[in-house]
Length: 438
Ligand code: URA
Ligand code: CA
Image (cartoon, rainbow, N blue to C red; front, side, top):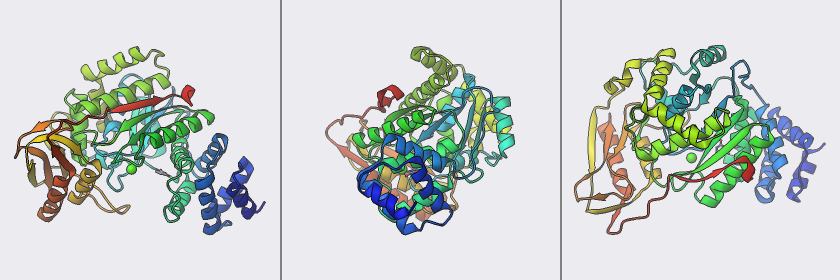
């Protein structure tokens, strides 16, 4: 086999076989195939697309290019949840304990934040003492004991994707649905779950800007998951405003705790309930959607979800009393309100600007591995569609550095649009895409 023939085949719109994709991907990982040939193939895929079976082959080859997690010693169906990344999206911290409190095991690996979106691992580290670096055996035995563990990535999951993603980044080939879908699904499959609930964000603060693109990505990932023998569903959800009202690591832990107590933002709560329902259905807890919803609502109301979160924190060395005493979380030295420059309706809260504002405060990182400040961030005091008076607080900013506060305050003002007309507020969830829909 020669790489040039495979590039030509894809250039001319033909499907590559599993053996051909293996030749390309393994050759690339092992350094036999150079960047320029992989880049040419990626560009050919960008223009010609891929067949569903072809995308699935690519995904599985990348998933098996490095370490894979074996969760088979955990009893039951292990369902993982993945979000394509949003602002104020602290769903994992709520959904994981809720689902676990319904008796479904949750063994989840998460990443750190990059750019304007936060990462679950960073958020968890704002809980004093919390350890995200469990060894695989510790991780698995905790899930068997407690039904739940949340950790950072260990080992080398899908190294082929890591190489290919870096190459795509500098060759204008990131924005290809087959390549994005296989990239995401390869990492999820390597992490060992039997099924996936995918949350594909759409809007100004998301990777996918239009509903049509988000639906296509969601459908492609559901198809890959299903063809790879994993039960998979996707929700296409709104990212035209931040999901929750708090943005920043400790602030998002606070919001998760408040939500598990029944006091969080309604949009965040709604999405968490629906993601949990899908996880229960995939795990076979029940086949009845209404029954699943009843179970999840019950765990929210009776405090079982909150109690499971406390158990998780304590099992991983963290200070469980944060549940009662939120001041045990890191606190910023300064706070400042952003006043409304005029009265009217909140017509837009740009999630991308809010995310960048949080990053400016120190809550996020532009470069991988850069240090972050767990205490800082912002709390929205208004939601899309609210009516405000001139001077009312739109958001409260928390900072440890007065200069960062100044820069962030200027940005935060830009995030809000106020006008005379009441806007149409987009729904939290646009669509569900089930295996039978694709
Ligand atoms: N996120 C990923 O993990 N991969 C992509 O290709 C795009 C977004
Ligand atoms: Ca993103």
